[in-house]
Length: 115
Length: 114
Image (cartoon, rainbow over all chains, first blue to last red; front, side, top):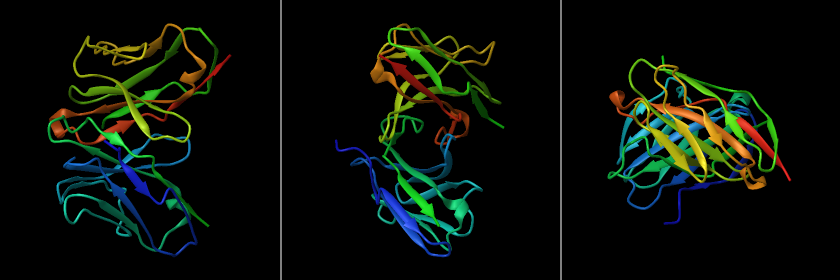
């Protein structure tokens, strides 16, 4: 069990650029979640996948954000036309089918800085 | 809506001191309650959990009791160590709406001095 991995760990970009983050969940975890954590705050829920289906999206996820999990394994989170307010830590979590959905295993996060 | 409020930090203690971090919640139903810990440079880790009133979650010497009457879930440890220095997050999820969305407090940073 290697844990949830996220890449890259750090990303610095200029305002207006597009960025994409990847999350690899723990093997055979069918549920996957994205959260955003700004400095000094707790994580905020963004979206939830069960297998390849995106079942819930927060209103925090504006039109510039899109998340996919095409084969029910890894997931990507893309932000288009980044803004300085997008600077945050983006956390991914996964959960196995044999546990409750609220039992979530978190990755180390991708820290995004928008200049 | 559902929310979590926890005491502001930082909290600074000497080794072997008693720790309390207060957490209260607002929820329309009967949420599950959690404490997560985030060590420097690492991801969030579940520390303990309680799913119904009067349940006590415990792990690594930490305890928290689900108090429905006071809507609280305070974290306690009888004797802290330097290695407990981290950020602690209180959180809830509502199993009646699927349980997949965890709502976190703002976090409380703990410093333990040797």
